[in-house]
Image (cartoon, rainbow, N blue to C red):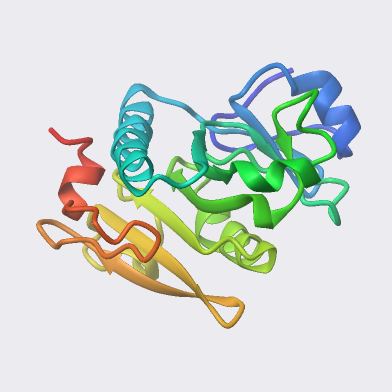
Length: 208
């Protein structure tokens, strides 16, 4: 089988159970509408995700909330049999885990209420980050979603023309995301973590 980086693996559509049997042990794949996608975890991709995690963990500790950061766990919406997202970063509310029927056995979440924040670091399957996940994460009720596009892969409507490294912060308002874009030395604004003191460039260049 040939795997195209950042593209769906060409094969018959899989349901969640089939995906879990074939790919559940490898955190570089996710399932969207029956198609398996390689998340392309390059070195710089992982640096950006790790930088976001480090800064958010400090905020969680400072606030004292019962939250923790889950990296690349599966989010399988309970109403979608052929989709299982694998966010690069997810902030989970420990108090909600008693409602998660799969959690005690596997790192799988099914309820949007369990998640307070997600971040995706863009790779070549950027359309999923900017379109499908914006829609579905909003439907799930996840309050804040970051799209960290350090390689400038998104369409010009998302990252400007000429294309620039862009951090898009999606904030849930009345069931839909309002999106703000941050670039360069602009200070970011997070409603979930209002005390974050970071610029877009610090996030997109992983603090370099």
